Length: 419
Image (cartoon, rainbow, N blue to C red; front, side, top):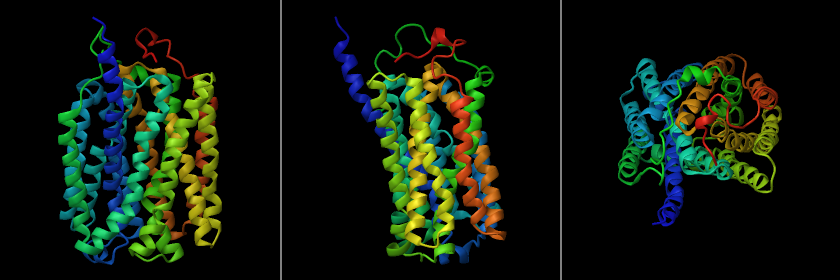
């Protein structure tokens, strides 16, 4: 009997699975964004005073744990599978988010940020593995853009939901509600998720040790590119509310902070889908995958230079527009680069590869988060914005001239994933 009906049903399910990855990413960003907004709340500052420099240190704590966990979570998810790995990460970071309500000072708050970073790190390796398992090559950039747009949607919802909850029920309510939603997600995921049809057919792909991946030119260069690229997004996500408040005098109200703070993240949500869809269209028209993905990455990365004029203008609307342009560029760039590892490594190594690359992301985020707080406290935002306008050019140069071709790596080609 033909297995075509079963395969067709499995292909339809792929959009349900990517919706889980999308919603998990929304929650991931809602949880990490809460502190960025409650920091601007007078009620929170009375309970747990947080200066700009301390905020930079807390972000560095989060990113350091995030970097460490990325190196471990990818191989772990490859070992235990997408279902168990994703559920475990969600439960961990949801409980860590709720734990913030017990913070009484810098040390306890720092411990909560470390715990949150350890759990949240697993989202991207798990989602990247899901995309590699469920989607053919020409759909991977679009699928990656869809789930990664959850970061933008989460950031869009953050000012609306968090400002409203803090003003209505106090700052602790935001941590409790978001953590509770994460536990609900984990239960639904556990009940619904299944492996794609045919996943267990044929020989099982052997696991590839992380050391072998790190010995490839692709892995080293991709990791280094994320060291420079991703801190730009972390800065926008963590610091944009403070930038609006401290530089442009935006008040902590729904009408003022709530609506203005969401604009760059709306732009990023559009960029995620646009970046993936545009590259997918180029591939369907016959452009080689290597050229299409790198051309898309280059176009969107160049838009991020908008961070530089954003700090040089005193006009609030123009500053928001330029930061939004950079956020749009980052999202479109990332929608393309999320699809890089499945083009090079077999399915059994996708989560490991993405986890290792995200170590570079986390280390860059940790270092530059600390430096951001230090500089903002002492000098102001100008050198920080200029630096974040230059970093994307460094990352792009690494991708274009250091990464090598996007095709199955010859060392692993016997088990490389096929479209």
